[in-house]
Length: 78
Image (cartoon, rainbow, N blue to C red):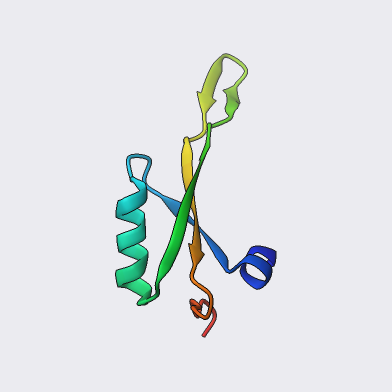
């Protein structure tokens, strides 16, 4: 909520092969807003122990932090 209130930025979990232009166009079309910029964040999955003899790993994730132009807003809770 701090990013939304102070910086007009929204965070989305996106597909791992998504690019910045694809995300920018998707947000613009879905929410009908003007996008100023997109930043990407990758998070590697954590290693987990399934049983004492088995190891596993959680899924890698990719996030996009989308900055909207001033005066634009996405109504998430409305």
